[in-house]
Length: 174
Length: 349
Image (tube, rainbow over all chains, first blue to last red; front, side, top):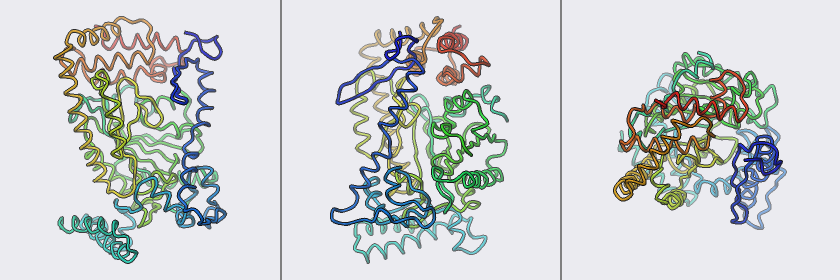
């Protein structure tokens, strides 16, 4: 089978494309496929999708300053919208207002329930105690309790209920 | 250990052992981690990328679990070697695309691979053969804790681990299971199943992950979100879902065998016949036929083939593997000839 684009070389790459519900199959040689692939990547970039979402996140009427710069890496929110990736860990603080609705859209939640990094557990505990499992569970429990308190104060009852369940779960394991 | 030693060994996840390994090929977990305050890979200046590489490398190499591992800088590899690592699922497309200050560390049995300066500073991956996510989690959790005690990870109490892309923020975890579902494809139940999966916060991808088409009836099921649930809950959710899918596939196999036995066996034996006698074969055809033979082995029709050997063929018949086996670059047609030869050697007798 010859390549559908150049018609000269043997087709070795088989591509299925769906445009407006129309499915087409393309049979391409390697050089043509590479070119086509580069085009496709431009067409369909995660950052485009994210940029769309990043706009949807903010409530209408609420003017968000897109020129706010991250003090650590110098990135602004507009840059993020164009690239779809943040510049550094500090961007999360700098763009917090805009990011929270975006994260909520992506994950359906903005509450973290996962593990703690070894270091952050070690820092607030006595040296030597960090490695024990019980210590990190205790640390986690304290963290959940603090967040439960905060959630109740902020009247985020759905989150509060979930935190309460997590606390119960941890306490039952003691 | 060197890169060229890998070609002589079977990756752990291809051994074809572990729970439910007739349908579940492998279980894989990856964690995305970054160094606090240092710009993420796409924004880092050359010196900052080198700094990230140095910090990560030091932490990894001084740890217990990476003894006997190989460290490779991506820009020191040729294009066949890069493709070779990709075919073995040890690196991602992103890692080998632009290679400045990027590296990968691979453990002895290819169970652990750690990519440095991919989208995130660290991408830790652990893979197990069969249906074994909890085992994979136990391993990766320890690695993560040890690296976390040496590296100041980007972490916030409210949002968890901070990643370059907000789709990974939180646990930074992607847990996935590779399934072989030929009977659900043949009985045309697969689309409905995949739709249901996406409604439950899970996603299905092809053999090579993100953006790849499912081929040879292989599907990777993984979690979509990383905030709002503990790692344990996410893994538990996938496990429950996979258990159900496995039951559906088993039932579909039983029905095919009971109601269409002759046609069913015919397809399997024809696939085996073609693989045993072909002298030129494309990679697409190979994967489709190997999938049928694998099904035939699971059903007990095809004997005398070792599962790990068959599993290995899925990877060894990929372009870069064929070229490594031959020891030189091959044109597409030459590869099709070499591929047929490799298959005949493995299962031709």
